[in-house]
Structure formats: structure tokens, C-alpha cells
Image 1 (cartoon, rainbow, N blue to C red):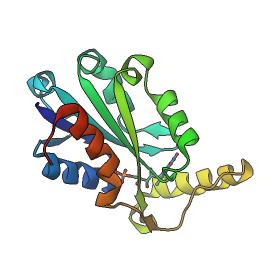
Image 2 (image 1 turned 135 degrees about the horizontal axis):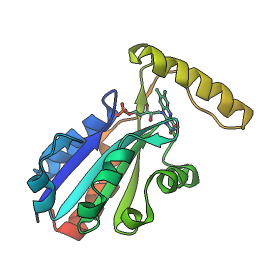
Image 3 (image 1 turned 30 degrees about the vertical axis):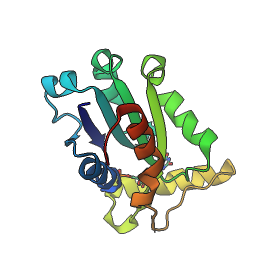
Length: 171
Ligand SMILES: Cc1cc2nc3c(=O)[nH]c(=O)nc-3n(C[C@H](O)[C@H](O)[C@H](O)COP(=O)(O)O)c2cc1C
């Protein structure tokens, strides 16, 4: 079975997961937009990785653009977020708000913990995060502005297991 990983992130967390997956599954990992049409069309299964900023998936537009090809494939999508994987309802809400039903129907979703290094953020992201954090407090939610790094290889295990079951991929 031929697989490919397409990912989009901003500060390295999504890329790190894509790189580990690529190494473990022996398949190419490509930044969204850099793939060729035949690469997508020839794949039997596609793993997509995206992070989230202020409720919006980085891959949102790419998913819409490529919907026609995607719906004929077996799809796996991992979402990298500050929201911990235990907050399933919130994370599921992100998926529903960003991805159309056509893709949701043929895609398995996995939630992976992200990382934040405040000093490395662009000025605009620093501002957005501070505003988001203040707004979330008033809603009784927490958006952290302090550094964290929860990116580990172990977080990939449930997804690897699902992929090897469905695709017979050898890890
Ligand atoms: C400006 C900003 C907004 C963010 N918004 C959200 C959000 O809405 N929900 C969430 O769960 N995490 C949010 N995060 C956390 C990121 O998704 C997390 O840092 C992730 O690891 C980023 O991955 P990347 O480096 O691959 O882009 C936000 C982070 C920043 C800096």
C-alpha cells in the first residue's frame, strides 16, 4: 500500500510528528502545497497533519482545494494543538468547524499534544495568543501563554496502530 504524508504547521510541532511518521512508515512527508498531482493521485492512503491557530486548522484551505481527490482515498488526519487530547469534545468541535462532512466521512482523526515556545512566536502570534488567552478566561477556558512541550513519539502510537491495521503498514 502506497502512503504519503502531507502536513502544515508553523513552529515545528506538526513537522516533527510528520518526520517521525515518515521515518517509521518509510513514506514521504511533504509540506502542503509542495506535493505534485500524481503524488496525491497515486497514493492509496494519505496521512494529513495540521496544527490549529485560534480555532482554525492550518490545512483548512488545502483540504477544501483537494477534496475531490481526497474523498477517494483512505485518510488519516492528526491535529496538533495546545488543547490536551483528553478534551475530546473541544477537539472534535475543531474538526467539525473546519472540515466538510465529505472528508469527515472517510477520515480517521487523531489528536496530538503540541508545544509552545513564546519567545519564538511572530509578533502577531504573540498578540493573538495573549488576546485569545484573555478571552478564553472569560469563557472559563484555558489557553496557555507559558511554554510547554508535549511532543513525543509515544503520542503517535494509537495512530500507528490504526494505520498498520488498516493498511498493513510495517513499522
Ligand atoms: C496564536 C496562537 C493561537 C493558538 N490557538 C490555538 C487554539 O485555538 N486551540 C488550540 O488547541 N491550540 C492553539 N494554539 C496552540 C498551537 O496549536 C500549538 O502550539 C501547536 O503545537 C502548534 O504547532 P505547529 O508549531 O506545528 O504550528 C495556538 C497557538 C498560538 C501561538
